[in-house]
Length: 331
Ligand SMILES: [Zn+2]
Ligand SMILES: [Zn+2]
Image (cartoon, rainbow, N blue to C red; front, side, top):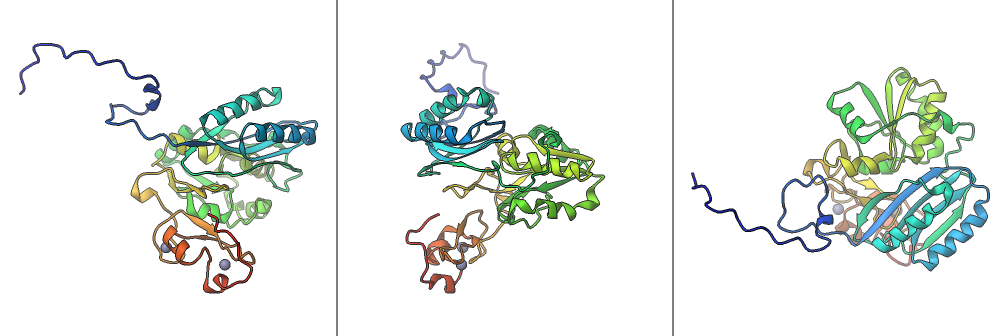
């Protein structure tokens, strides 16, 4: 055994300014180096709220975003707002306080992910009939299911609770990542949800949990289930985004599909939880995907970076020889 120290070690010098922000609450011991902070942030948000005049708000919002270097996509409708916005720390903080300066948006919840890749090159603000196209016109938001916190979902899994977890996203999203044991119906557009629900009728008396990327699709999807007589329905508060931020490397498997230039967000570090899909060409595990660059095809294929280049961003020889290809490689 080493002899006890005769003298207390000298006190450590104070940390440099800004040092502490590198440490999240989950880091228990000191690290050799602070983790590398990604350069940019992407924030996703939505809120169902009555907007009297979405047209004038859209114009005002676009002008403000352009003047303040904000990039991304924002949809406005009479029923609310849905957006995904990209920038460095200052731009994002500025955007958040701007949006919150509107009384109707003061409690908007921003879900953040970090990235080194430019997620958006332009700013779009669009007027829509719905903030997410659902076609569920008769569905009432007040019927939306109660929300499970990520902790509660984790506990469902750990307690081996008897529940059915259903992906409400499109098939190509669930292909590259999903919750453990999730049902992943073949959905090509969210408007197909009522048809999917017909196939779930055997679970009417079971506990059902729905999920989507940030929670917006489940607001109506879960309401629709309850309106169809499903008795015990939940949705995940803040969707996958909220869960993987708190509990990566647990019950989420693979990558999370994103509709921006990052293509995919990969939260897990455990090798066996990184991928649920394989490259279309070489079979290597990957969560990356592209749209076939033959514009007449435009099919989404899971494809590793090497095969993407080798196949000129196309899904097949036929597509590679097409005369109607994208002029610029994208993805
Ligand atoms: Zn490959
Ligand atoms: Zn193709």
